[in-house]
Length: 472
Ligand code: ADP
Ligand code: MG
Image (tube, rainbow, N blue to C red; front, side):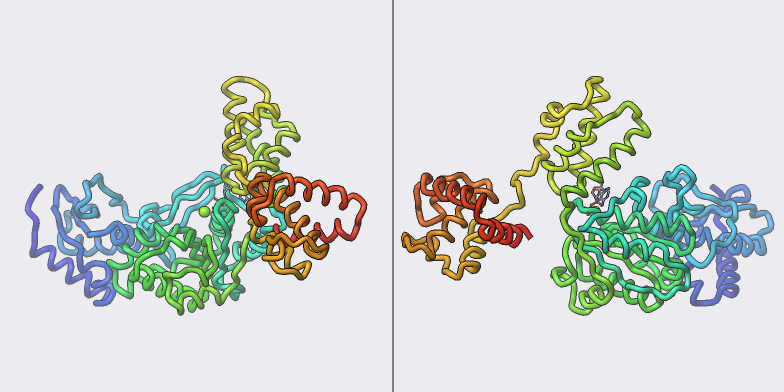
């Protein structure tokens, strides 16, 4: 440590201010402090990583030049973040980056995550890590996600300067149905083509990284930072909380959309159900394309499993899962894509660790706890009663009553039959829910209808329609 030359430092600042102008100066340099000068190295500090990386990528040479104009012996500048314990940074001047600070992540040939040339910048803005497996290639398209996938692809293939088709693109779905997968696929694709920089953020990162980084900057800095983003992707928007964060979000959303930048959002609910957001934001969110992804159907689950096995085999060539086992998993494991993955991982682990081939029996044992608790889709007895009553034009209380006229008896039997086949309720429980009847009465009704549908086409069809209504 040696003499910190305060006077020299003020002159350097004066030079810098004169060169970049007051606005830029106060945005970026106002809080830069001199820490020390040692053997030709000037150590400067700033309060945030964002500032550090911005200055490093945009102004490093200029700052050095200003120093050298004052003190010729200065050979390098070292920039640190105050209050962090520091192992320090690049002093080598960097070439100017293009337009913005956000450098996104790039794919290399192996498809691994590679930090961009200035990882600090990406990190500072809170870019969330990406999973290299979540690409369009590995995304299986089925009935429930065709539209979402097509829209995502469209967005991902957008070129710089193209008119933006749907903005924002808002995808919502329950947990484990592929939202993050699609969003990361957009990010990989966009950054691989290099057409538009894509910044992928979870709502949490948005709150704690991006927003706080921006908050410490001025409006000018904010605009400058946004200029670099072609596509902003925000995952799990339902977690966005807090009035001021929402204000920042709103500000960012408006700024990007107005500037013709693409915004993509995923959430577990539609915009109208984001209760904590104010009306203007909600309507802005709903103003682009809102797409829902439904539950993964059995067919789609099977396809996902098959593609997963293929992928696993590239690392574990001996891993083989017979089709009946895949069929079993697709049929029984929950609709959540994560559980499908978990089920396969267990089979793989078991197979690797014990050397035993994967069999149906092994699968049944290994995935027992991932099996859907209610199969088929959870249908409520009330719903059955309501739908059946409507279909046969009787009231729900008729169904529960002890009346035995033909126009009530048949619907009642149908409803009990549906309760038995569509729910996991026991016969006594169903009896209780139908006006306190005995379980033998329910059993009789179930047998009766089972017998009838074999011969009575009209009834069989009626029941199919009811089932479909209830399982929709
Ligand atoms: P979400 O973000 O909606 O909760 P994810 O995108 O994290 O769900 O998906 C959960 C898991 O299921 C991931 O491993 C994902 O790759 C997989 N998955 C979901 N949908 C699909 C699909 N259509 N094709 C391939 N994998 C899928
Ligand atoms: Mg997710």
